[in-house]
Amino acid sequence: MGKIALITGASNGIGMELAKIHAKSGGDLVLVARNLENLEKLKSELEKSHGVLVYLIRKDLSMLEAAREVYDEVKKQNFRIDYLVNNAGFGIFGLFYETDWTREQQMINLNITALTQLTKLVLPDMIKQKEGRVLNVASTAAFQPGPLMAIYYATKAYVLFFSEAIGEELRGTGVTVTALCPGPTSSGFQAVSDIFDSRLIKGKKLPSSKEVAEYGYQAMMNGRAVAIHGLVNYLMANSVRVSPRSLVLKMVRYMQEKN
Image 1: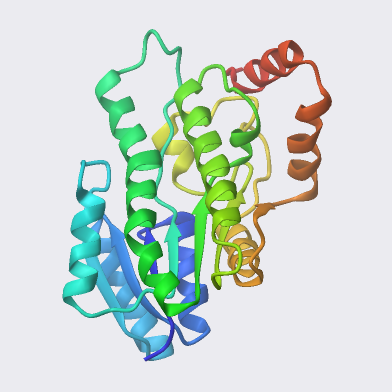
Image 2: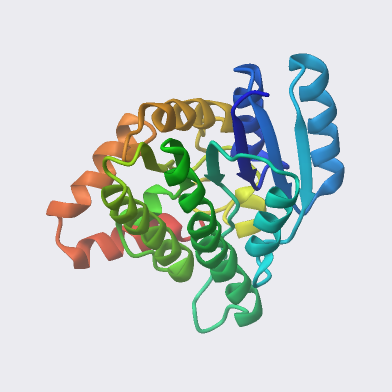
């Protein structure tokens, strides 16, 4: 059996591409998502093309304790998780005082709670194994507040800071944590978030999910703490540190607004 990667949000976008990359390297997979039909297609493709084991768990990680249920299923199957990829997440566009709280609570549960709980459950096993890698998918949104996507930006800031902090705690254990910070990417995210017409997206040639996944997977394997995809994204993320916060807020809002 090859190294096993547990990947959430694996039914499309970056998560699906990460699964393909890992399978191509000869690794086995535990894939988690709500869309079982897409997962089954991916499982068939990867097992046929690469001869790897692909185990599917249909789960809505926006539900409280869903992460615990995923972990319990993994233990029941006696899988040793070598790589944990917390990729599942979504965003919501709109003025905070107008957006739907129920949907936002689901976003917080998915982007923060499920990611944190699953990491909490898997890390002790990795430490006992004296090796393991965690890839948490954050975003360039993590580097500044985000008017018109206030909660989404805040959740990604949490993912970044959480990942950096526990990565330092794990120094010397053989386990590394990587925060992948892509900018806007061609994936299903824009449709869910309703930001197709924002200045940030409209008319732009976005990097593919495959490009971002390849970059992120390599960063994880190299044990990098923070991986910002793309030179422009890297420069913009770091420029925030030396720019007046009032200016940053105005610029982010301008880019988020729809034409």
